[in-house]
Length: 226
Length: 77
Image 1: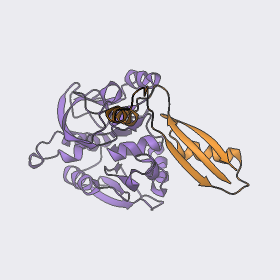
Image 2 (image 1 turned 90 degrees about the vertical axis):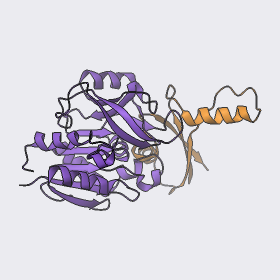
Image 3 (image 1 turned 135 degrees about the vertical axis):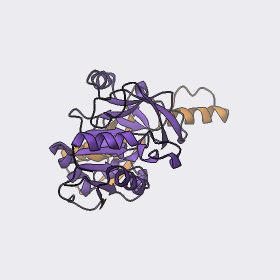
Image 4 (image 1 turned 90 degrees about the horizontal axis):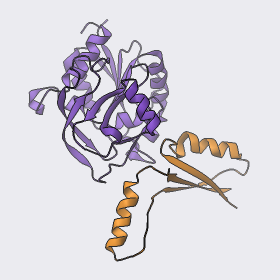
């Protein structure tokens, strides 16, 4: 079976095509495009990606409406069954709102929208998503968000750090995130949410390819033929 | 039945919008503003038979994110 992925599109998603192209180029697999109103996911998925954007116009809270959409009920079931799920930017916000990841993403501490390349530190290279990086490696990945300020209570943050669930940390202050957290894993390690956009750094034409190893890690980790 | 749901950030959660509003008020020359917190007001018209438990569940499931927010339900006649 070739690598089979789904990219979910919500009304207002705008990085769904970039995500699909990145997955196709790096894994050589099949990418299904799934609409938010679909109550069922394609069969045999190895990987689900929730893309960046401004789903439902960020109404109520970023990611709040998308998290309650029909397709997300299916994504939650799939995630609990062990399917690998990546949420980038708005996708990260959706994962926290859906309860698949702890914490919340609040308005950037500096109020402004932040859109630039940022240094990231790979905190944990033992995860399904980061095995092709080295621990402590500094990489460059762009961010583009208004609500990327990661918040969780101190007890939750201590637990995340203690369990190695902080996958990426910002190498410099970006948005006021608690402990500079840029990406977190769920307890079983099959769900990653991150504000920076690895799908925008997969080949030199994009200014760098530091995001590539994330998709390569997933492909290798799942042991699926490319 | 009219219901107002007041959603506010929990104590200890930094409120960048409240802080910006505070600075703007100071910029307009208003003195003595000690602190500003921005929240959200949601007004609903619901069936009179709607139970308190149902209203509470609406807040928990959607209207407020309890990681960062508190909510208060006010019934307005």
